[in-house]
Length: 257
Image 1 (cartoon, rainbow, N blue to C red):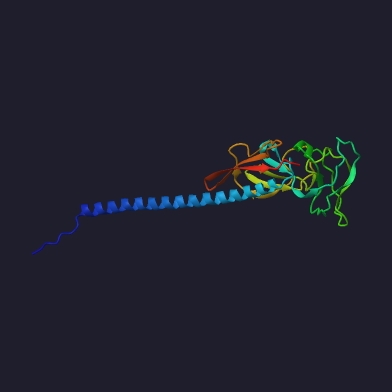
Image 2 (image 1 turned 180 degrees about the vertical axis):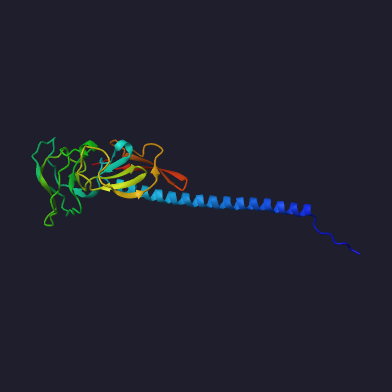
Protein backbone atom coordinates (compact mmCIF):
# COMPACT_ATOMS: atom_id res chain seq x y z
CA UNK A 1 0.00 0.00 0.00
CA UNK A 2 1.46 3.34 -1.07
CA UNK A 3 1.26 6.40 1.13
CA UNK A 4 0.65 9.85 -0.45
CA UNK A 5 2.72 12.69 0.90
CA UNK A 6 1.92 16.39 0.22
CA UNK A 7 3.99 19.57 0.43
CA UNK A 8 5.12 20.68 3.79
CA UNK A 9 4.54 24.28 4.81
CA UNK A 10 8.25 25.00 4.59
CA UNK A 11 8.45 23.63 1.05
CA UNK A 12 5.43 25.67 0.00
CA UNK A 13 6.88 28.86 1.44
CA UNK A 14 10.24 28.15 -0.21
CA UNK A 15 8.60 27.70 -3.61
CA UNK A 16 6.56 30.88 -3.17
CA UNK A 17 9.68 32.85 -2.24
CA UNK A 18 11.56 31.52 -5.26
CA UNK A 19 8.66 32.35 -7.58
CA UNK A 20 8.44 35.85 -6.10
CA UNK A 21 12.18 36.41 -6.54
CA UNK A 22 12.05 35.19 -10.14
CA UNK A 23 9.03 37.41 -10.81
CA UNK A 24 10.85 40.47 -9.46
CA UNK A 25 13.90 39.80 -11.63
CA UNK A 26 11.67 39.13 -14.65
CA UNK A 27 9.77 42.38 -14.16
CA UNK A 28 13.02 44.31 -13.71
CA UNK A 29 14.46 42.71 -16.84
CA UNK A 30 11.39 43.51 -18.92
CA UNK A 31 11.27 47.05 -17.51
CA UNK A 32 14.96 47.51 -18.34
CA UNK A 33 14.43 46.28 -21.90
CA UNK A 34 11.46 48.62 -22.37
CA UNK A 35 13.39 51.54 -20.88
CA UNK A 36 16.34 50.94 -23.19
CA UNK A 37 13.99 50.65 -26.15
CA UNK A 38 12.25 53.93 -25.26
CA UNK A 39 15.61 55.65 -24.81
CA UNK A 40 16.76 54.36 -28.19
CA UNK A 41 13.56 55.64 -29.81
CA UNK A 42 13.95 59.04 -28.10
CA UNK A 43 17.57 59.30 -29.25
CA UNK A 44 16.62 58.36 -32.80
CA UNK A 45 13.92 61.05 -32.81
CA UNK A 46 16.33 63.61 -31.38
CA UNK A 47 18.98 62.80 -33.98
CA UNK A 48 16.44 62.96 -36.82
CA UNK A 49 15.04 66.26 -35.53
CA UNK A 50 18.51 67.71 -35.05
CA UNK A 51 19.74 66.60 -38.46
CA UNK A 52 16.69 68.12 -40.11
CA UNK A 53 17.49 71.51 -38.57
CA UNK A 54 21.20 71.18 -39.40
CA UNK A 55 20.45 70.24 -43.02
CA UNK A 56 18.16 73.23 -43.45
CA UNK A 57 20.82 75.58 -42.11
CA UNK A 58 23.51 73.95 -44.24
CA UNK A 59 21.41 74.20 -47.40
CA UNK A 60 20.63 77.90 -46.91
CA UNK A 61 24.13 78.89 -45.83
CA UNK A 62 25.68 77.23 -48.89
CA UNK A 63 23.46 79.46 -51.03
CA UNK A 64 24.56 82.63 -49.24
CA UNK A 65 26.32 85.56 -50.87
CA UNK A 66 30.10 84.93 -50.80
CA UNK A 67 31.70 86.59 -47.76
CA UNK A 68 28.32 87.46 -46.21
CA UNK A 69 28.25 84.74 -43.53
CA UNK A 70 29.15 86.22 -40.15
CA UNK A 71 28.73 85.17 -36.52
CA UNK A 72 27.06 87.70 -34.22
CA UNK A 73 25.74 88.02 -30.67
CA UNK A 74 28.66 86.20 -29.07
CA UNK A 75 28.45 83.21 -31.37
CA UNK A 76 24.76 82.49 -30.80
CA UNK A 77 23.68 83.83 -34.21
CA UNK A 78 24.92 83.29 -37.75
CA UNK A 79 23.82 85.95 -40.24
CA UNK A 80 23.99 85.87 -44.03
CA UNK A 81 22.56 87.36 -47.23
CA UNK A 82 20.47 84.88 -49.27
CA UNK A 83 21.16 84.95 -53.01
CA UNK A 84 18.05 85.63 -55.08
CA UNK A 85 19.72 85.73 -58.49
CA UNK A 86 22.76 86.91 -60.37
CA UNK A 87 24.78 86.70 -63.55
CA UNK A 88 27.86 87.92 -65.39
CA UNK A 89 28.20 91.52 -66.47
CA UNK A 90 29.75 92.90 -69.66
CA UNK A 91 32.92 94.95 -69.61
CA UNK A 92 34.19 96.74 -66.52
CA UNK A 93 32.07 98.50 -63.92
CA UNK A 94 33.10 101.82 -62.37
CA UNK A 95 35.07 101.21 -59.18
CA UNK A 96 37.49 102.96 -56.85
CA UNK A 97 40.51 101.71 -58.79
CA UNK A 98 39.49 102.85 -62.30
CA UNK A 99 37.85 106.02 -61.00
CA UNK A 100 34.99 105.89 -63.52
CA UNK A 101 31.73 107.66 -62.73
CA UNK A 102 28.78 105.78 -61.27
CA UNK A 103 26.31 103.81 -63.38
CA UNK A 104 22.57 103.31 -62.97
CA UNK A 105 22.40 99.90 -64.67
CA UNK A 106 24.45 96.76 -65.27
CA UNK A 107 24.60 95.00 -68.65
CA UNK A 108 24.21 91.33 -67.81
CA UNK A 109 25.97 89.52 -70.61
CA UNK A 110 23.17 88.90 -73.07
CA UNK A 111 20.86 87.00 -70.73
CA UNK A 112 17.61 88.20 -69.23
CA UNK A 113 17.86 88.59 -65.46
CA UNK A 114 14.94 87.60 -63.23
CA UNK A 115 14.95 89.62 -60.03
CA UNK A 116 12.62 87.42 -58.01
CA UNK A 117 12.67 88.84 -54.48
CA UNK A 118 16.04 90.59 -54.87
CA UNK A 119 16.61 93.92 -53.15
CA UNK A 120 20.36 94.50 -53.43
CA UNK A 121 23.19 94.15 -55.95
CA UNK A 122 26.69 93.11 -54.90
CA UNK A 123 29.91 93.06 -56.92
CA UNK A 124 33.36 92.03 -55.73
CA UNK A 125 32.81 92.01 -51.96
CA UNK A 126 35.81 90.40 -50.23
CA UNK A 127 34.80 90.53 -46.56
CA UNK A 128 31.78 90.76 -44.28
CA UNK A 129 32.82 94.33 -43.46
CA UNK A 130 32.41 95.26 -47.12
CA UNK A 131 29.17 93.30 -47.49
CA UNK A 132 27.47 94.96 -44.53
CA UNK A 133 28.83 98.47 -45.14
CA UNK A 134 26.21 100.39 -47.10
CA UNK A 135 28.84 102.64 -48.67
CA UNK A 136 31.00 99.76 -49.95
CA UNK A 137 29.08 97.49 -52.31
CA UNK A 138 25.42 97.71 -51.41
CA UNK A 139 23.45 99.63 -54.01
CA UNK A 140 20.20 99.93 -52.12
CA UNK A 141 16.85 98.76 -53.43
CA UNK A 142 17.32 97.44 -56.95
CA UNK A 143 15.14 98.66 -59.78
CA UNK A 144 12.49 96.54 -61.47
CA UNK A 145 13.46 93.85 -63.97
CA UNK A 146 13.46 94.82 -67.63
CA UNK A 147 12.26 92.25 -70.17
CA UNK A 148 13.26 94.40 -73.14
CA UNK A 149 17.01 93.86 -72.71
CA UNK A 150 19.51 92.11 -70.48
CA UNK A 151 20.20 94.86 -67.95
CA UNK A 152 19.83 95.28 -64.22
CA UNK A 153 18.48 98.71 -63.37
CA UNK A 154 19.76 100.16 -60.09
CA UNK A 155 17.94 102.54 -57.79
CA UNK A 156 20.56 105.20 -58.47
CA UNK A 157 24.05 105.76 -59.85
CA UNK A 158 26.75 103.79 -58.05
CA UNK A 159 30.51 103.31 -58.08
CA UNK A 160 31.56 99.90 -56.75
CA UNK A 161 34.49 99.27 -54.47
CA UNK A 162 36.07 96.89 -57.00
CA UNK A 163 35.20 94.68 -59.96
CA UNK A 164 34.64 90.97 -59.57
CA UNK A 165 37.53 88.78 -60.76
CA UNK A 166 34.92 86.61 -62.51
CA UNK A 167 32.83 89.60 -63.76
CA UNK A 168 29.92 88.37 -61.66
CA UNK A 169 27.17 90.23 -59.82
CA UNK A 170 24.79 88.88 -57.20
CA UNK A 171 21.22 89.84 -56.39
CA UNK A 172 20.28 89.30 -52.74
CA UNK A 173 17.38 89.52 -50.33
CA UNK A 174 17.49 91.27 -46.96
CA UNK A 175 19.72 89.58 -44.36
CA UNK A 176 18.63 86.35 -42.66
CA UNK A 177 19.93 84.65 -39.52
CA UNK A 178 19.79 81.49 -37.44
CA UNK A 179 19.91 82.20 -33.70
CA UNK A 180 20.06 80.10 -30.55
CA UNK A 181 18.35 81.93 -27.70
CA UNK A 182 16.96 80.57 -24.40
CA UNK A 183 16.92 77.01 -25.72
CA UNK A 184 15.11 77.86 -28.96
CA UNK A 185 16.68 77.66 -32.42
CA UNK A 186 14.97 80.25 -34.61
CA UNK A 187 15.21 81.53 -38.19
CA UNK A 188 14.91 85.27 -38.84
CA UNK A 189 14.47 86.88 -42.26
CA UNK A 190 13.60 90.24 -43.78
CA UNK A 191 14.19 92.04 -40.49
CA UNK A 192 16.48 94.87 -41.66
CA UNK A 193 18.75 96.25 -44.33
CA UNK A 194 22.41 95.13 -44.39
CA UNK A 195 24.18 96.92 -41.54
CA UNK A 196 27.54 96.87 -39.78
CA UNK A 197 25.60 96.68 -36.50
CA UNK A 198 25.45 93.18 -35.03
CA UNK A 199 23.13 91.59 -32.48
CA UNK A 200 20.02 89.47 -32.16
CA UNK A 201 17.55 90.23 -35.00
CA UNK A 202 14.28 91.88 -34.09
CA UNK A 203 10.98 90.00 -34.18
CA UNK A 204 9.99 86.53 -33.03
CA UNK A 205 11.41 84.56 -35.94
CA UNK A 206 10.20 81.10 -36.93
CA UNK A 207 10.84 78.27 -34.46
CA UNK A 208 13.00 75.45 -35.85
CA UNK A 209 13.72 73.42 -32.70
CA UNK A 210 13.23 73.57 -28.93
CA UNK A 211 15.43 72.50 -25.97
CA UNK A 212 18.57 73.22 -27.99
CA UNK A 213 21.90 74.04 -26.38
CA UNK A 214 25.60 73.89 -27.12
CA UNK A 215 28.66 72.34 -25.51
CA UNK A 216 30.68 75.37 -26.61
CA UNK A 217 30.13 78.29 -28.97
CA UNK A 218 27.10 77.39 -31.16
CA UNK A 219 28.45 79.01 -34.34
CA UNK A 220 32.04 79.74 -35.35
CA UNK A 221 33.43 80.93 -38.70
CA UNK A 222 36.97 80.17 -39.82
CA UNK A 223 38.01 82.77 -42.37
CA UNK A 224 38.90 81.59 -45.85
CA UNK A 225 41.82 82.50 -48.07
CA UNK A 226 42.37 82.93 -51.81
CA UNK A 227 42.58 79.17 -52.29
CA UNK A 228 40.41 77.90 -49.42
CA UNK A 229 36.73 78.38 -48.63
CA UNK A 230 35.50 79.73 -45.32
CA UNK A 231 34.18 77.12 -42.88
CA UNK A 232 31.24 77.53 -40.51
CA UNK A 233 31.27 75.15 -37.53
CA UNK A 234 27.95 74.36 -35.84
CA UNK A 235 27.99 72.74 -32.37
CA UNK A 236 24.48 72.10 -31.06
CA UNK A 237 22.88 69.75 -28.53
CA UNK A 238 19.27 68.57 -28.62
CA UNK A 239 17.46 67.32 -25.50
CA UNK A 240 14.21 65.51 -24.77
CA UNK A 241 12.96 63.22 -22.00
CA UNK A 242 16.30 63.13 -20.22
CA UNK A 243 18.18 62.28 -23.42
CA UNK A 244 20.73 64.64 -25.00
CA UNK A 245 22.53 64.24 -28.31
CA UNK A 246 25.33 66.44 -29.64
CA UNK A 247 25.52 67.18 -33.36
CA UNK A 248 28.52 68.93 -34.87
CA UNK A 249 28.73 69.95 -38.51
CA UNK A 250 31.00 72.02 -40.73
CA UNK A 251 29.70 73.96 -43.72
CA UNK A 252 31.96 75.11 -46.56
CA UNK A 253 31.09 78.69 -47.49
CA UNK A 254 31.90 80.13 -50.91
CA UNK A 255 34.22 83.13 -50.74
CA UNK A 256 34.87 83.88 -54.42
CA UNK A 257 32.92 87.03 -55.32
